[in-house]
Length: 116
Image (cartoon, rainbow, N blue to C red; front, side, top):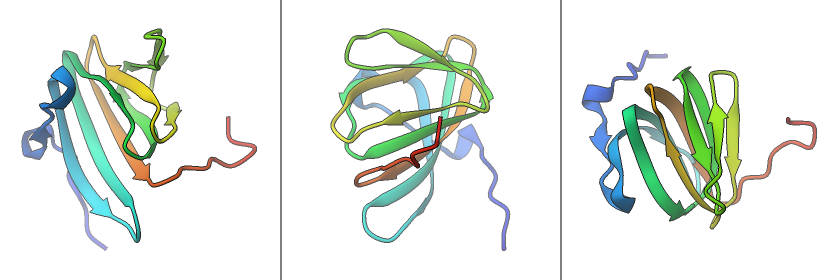
C-alpha cells in the first residue's frame, strides 16, 4: 500500500478543447483500455466540449462543478454525485467555484443496473 497525494500543482494542464484552468493528474492505468485521473478545475475553469474517448465516471470529491451534454445544459455536480458519460458522447465539464473529481475512463463503461 502507498498514499497518493491529489495535488493540482503536480497535475498536467489540460489544453485541448479550448479548456481553461483545468488540470489532470494520472493516478493509474488498468488492464485493457482504462485510466484513472484526479481532475482539478479552478474557479471559472472548464474542459471544453468534446466527444468522450472512453466511457467515463466523473465523481466529484471536493468543491462543486457542472457537467453538460450535447445540448449544453449544465447539471450541477457535488461531492457524493457522479456523472456517467458514454463513449463518444459530446460533453463539457467546469466549475464556478473550484472542483476536484476522480475520473475513471474505460473502453465501454456499463454501470450497475441499480446505480442511481
